Image 1 (cartoon, rainbow, N blue to C red):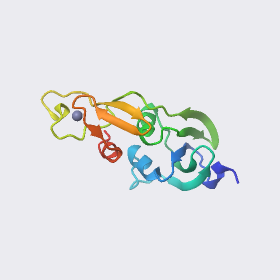
Image 2: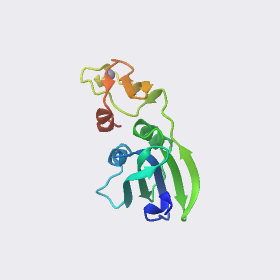
Image 3: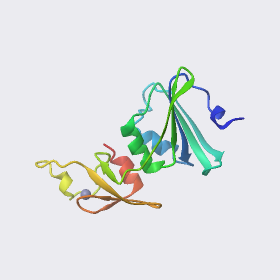
Length: 155
Ligand SMILES: [Zn+2]
């Protein structure tokens, strides 16, 4: 059985492959997929992968991820490969790439950060200090952001 066939084929939407094993739910949050609404999402967890050992795969119907989505996704699934499906066929393939600067992706978790000053709004900006392991810091206050905090503070 081919890897992609483990999940029911979709007509239109996006397949996110090579998500680190166990992180599919975080990907759903980071992409702000509203699970209360009628978007069908198929989730496969812990399937064997040559690249990652084990991986998660996500299929999102009727939604095509855009560049902004990919920038977010890079935070938790830097090796993810994306396939946009149109009419049951792969229309586009994309890879994610974690930028050095994350502009307006997540809010700083530090309550006294200058970005919390509503009178002088600043763009939210994070610096990726290290990729492996992931280390992200606020550009302004320097506070390190935990991955869970980043997911919670996604804009
Ligand atoms: Zn900050």
